[in-house]
Amino acid sequence: MGLAACQGAFGRNIQAVTYGEPTSCPSDLFEPMSAGGTVIDCVGWTLHVPFGMDIELSTAASHARSESIFDTDPIPIEITPDGHRVAYLDVRELRYLAKDLRSGFTRPITPRLTAEEIVAITSVASSADSRHFAVSTSENRRTFVTDFETGRTRTLDQVCWAYGLTGDSLMGSAGCDGVDVSIDAIRFDGTATRFRSEEEHPLDMSADLRWYIDFGEPASVYETATGRRVRVLPAELSEFQWAGADTLVARDADIEDGDDYIAIDARTGELISIGIPYSDSIVFGKVR
Image (cartoon, one colour):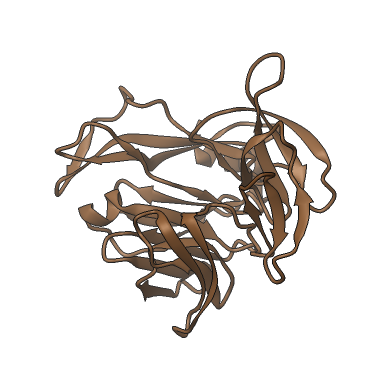
């Protein structure tokens, strides 16, 4: 069932997307397409809502590879913290689009991407208010930042990763190789302030950039502005990631029936069962 049917069922009150996962790869429904040396060989994402029909993004690319390499790499999508917008690489236009799932309105958030840029996508991020999007590629170290409401897109050079953004700045890095990465607060006027350094690129900042996770022993939540540790995370959980401004999700491998995800309220430490099975390619929206 496609998106139009879901809109018909829910109208403008469509429920917030809890999580998304790619369609099984390879799929008999899609013939791999070549774009200047890049092969997009898997298309389709399924977005899940708590009670109701799934939303199918049938033109959203999920995996791509170079023609000379057999193994495919995932192409990231982004579900906004409120669960009502999604950004994805469209196979027809070969650029990222952002779609508002309530209204159906779709906005381009990057120019048409080259084959080299597509296989080099490093991150897709959205702001806490779900208005701004950032798409980064290691090809020429560029990040495209778009205001969904106005349609204005600006290009930030020498920014290879975006970890989160606001209306006038983002947390990003020029480092593309994934090691010895310096993280900077980069304003859209071009000025930047050093935040911290990492041995590997992090994917660990809350949507509003207030908190970050340090994966040391023990893994903990820290306040961005002060560096103060505010919460130690449970040792029995692993693979922590943010799902919104104040919610973490983590893999719980100790449940009786196999791996599952559990949510953590970063403010109180409360553990919340969400009943979502573990997957190494899942993308979270609003989980509570």
